[in-house]
Image (cartoon, rainbow, N blue to C red):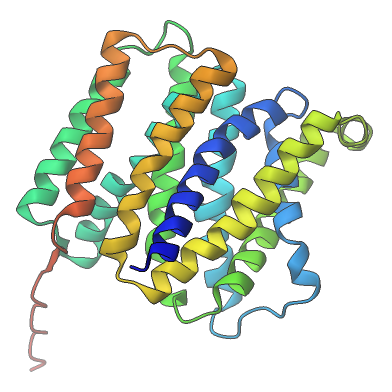
Length: 297
């Protein structure tokens, strides 16, 4: 990778790490479903000028949007709003690498390499260590909701494969639109039209800046840049930069919110990131040989 591309990859990872902090700030003024809807509503504005990618059917577009975006980020927002620390959230979300490899093995026969299997085991141990800290500063229910995020993220990663030929910026804008519309509808149903409007109209300058950062920069621009890097370089060179995200998110949360980590939780977080590093830096998985179809007599 060229130095400029390395700089872009690091910048995207930093933006995504800081987005966890910005989301927490926005959630002080907005309920989770409305904050997530506004996030994607802002990121979907380019749809006013961009046509839907012809390479992607509506069914596939909705499937990717509901998993990669709606499911992942709504679960994050609900969990953070119910007390899950931002730094811990940034680590748990990155465990999507574990679930992506596992689901790829189950659904597509992509057997993980020996090093990937070791990485999965390490990350799983780290998650179990984190589970041992649940119930003290946040509830088991909140943690269970948070675990929906990496699983949904993993499913979205696999659904995204058939859409790789589509223009990235156009694709992600339309994915955001498909997520924003049902989320705004959910907000109207759960909160009511009047409280929804009041929450939006009474956003403070701090809340507006946070939403613009999360929607326009973190969701729209950063995903577009990341997609371009994946288009121009092998995934093995690009994806490891995502390991910076939990470190940035945890450090920023510690500075902004004074988040602290007990010994067991900190050890679990480091173990999860270490396991993810082993998975991402190992060789590509092997694919099971296809079984021959039985002869028709």
